[in-house]
Image 1: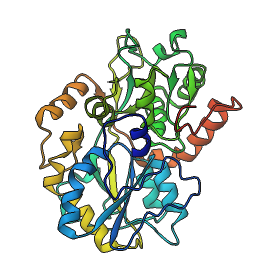
Image 2: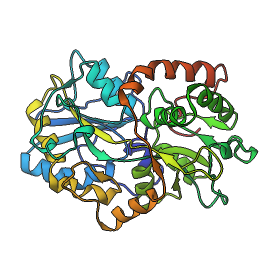
Image 3: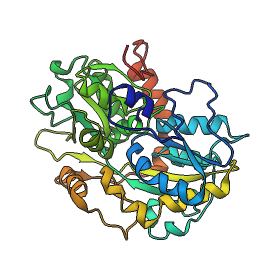
Image 4: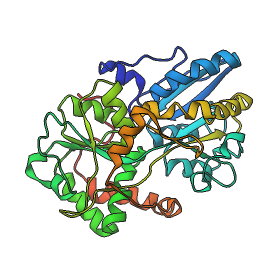
Length: 363
């Protein structure tokens, strides 16, 4: 999934924290003072820091309430909410599939039909109001174009000796973008061939990060050459984060069409959160046409069908995805396979390699 604002700042990224920001690179059982009196607490997958920085001050001023943010990988924020289920500390959750579906299935979310969900297509939200797409996005890979002079075109290209020890991708157990690696390869190759491929790829893998965002920093530092990511985060980090990277899409075969799928940020209300009224107001605000019209500024795609993808950054998204084949994903199928895929990845791909699975900051 992605890194925290704290780590991004450590890496020299030009991003400022919200005064109310509470960020953690790894929770590790450490209790963070996420909630304060009259605050709304948002647990969010990383990648949307610039959007929050731009739009939350107006919400805080209007409502007279602070928004405290805990940022981590998609799986991490859901895991934290799960640990706290009997005594919730957060009010709103933003995470990627399949972790948003997991949160709904395990009873972490309270059904809430925001008035601003009405313009979100039915396929992009839960019928019962448990969650809705907040920012549309696409799964991608990324390279450092100053280092990788010949852009890889196929999955097989990543097996070339030139990439030995220079590939990294996030842990599928804790990162939505990491699970996306399995989703895409199994969709294109079939399950057995996909895991055979991932075993071979492991020979080129340097490590696996707990979240995805820090991979962009590592790419820019030339500590790795290829990583997984998502289009919104990669374009935003390149344009606004001062990082040297380029999102790419891969094909199965030489001469084939590069392929990907939608991997949106989704939003939901946490059941029995300490400030449910504030949580509902925050969801309504983030799904408003005003905020949704700001989504293209961070290279995201508005979730609402009545808000167009426009502007310079919107055109950059359209250009990046031009010529890329989009395949549908059956998220119910993914949820049914998630546990098996995670176990198979840990046993058959990583095995007893001893490789790091929770890299947050390079040694």
